[in-house]
Amino acid sequence: MARALTTAMGDGTTVFSARNNASGDHADAWVSVTRNSINIARLPMLEALEQDIPLKPGDHLIVRHDANVRVTMLGGGITRNTLLGFSESPTLIQVIAAAEGLNVATANDREIFVLRRAAPGLTPKLYTIPMDSGEGLITAQRFPIEDEDVVYVGEAPIVPVERVINTFLQLGLIAAVAR
Image (cartoon, rainbow, N blue to C red; front, side):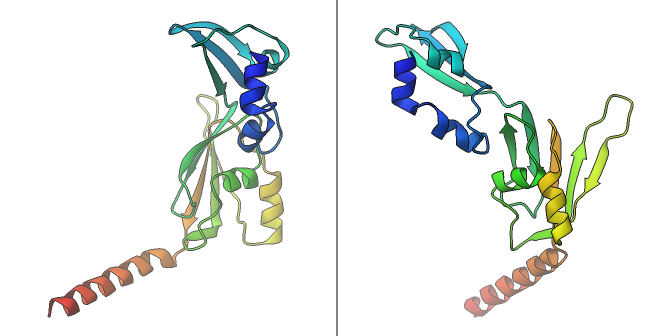
């Protein structure tokens, strides 16, 4: 099995670095072996790379990455609304980068919020991190994101106005073409 994994993925660093912010950490990756539609083994990636478990023709190797920290990215100011997974706690800036960054056309860099769950019976916490200054960028670079945090990036105030103007311009163009 180790030979099949290294042939397909090298040592796994290339595949997993992209998902683990270039850390190369395989600790949360698992390898499953399926034979005749039956799961016959499930091992941590590092153990699978160290052992020489014999495979048979038709066996399937499935590599899964189990995220320890899941973050939801939302808002009109983010390039891609998504759910991200990380093997260890990322910083706010790493999470924004993994979601393809702020949308330069719509983001309000003063309205970046992190909503953090609280223990039952307690009020969730809302953090506001304005990234329109060097101090805000440093804060975002150091702000640790926890499992199940929600990061919301608001839209710039001009965006709704631009949408209305664009709608009227499109209606005017349609009316001009119809004449």
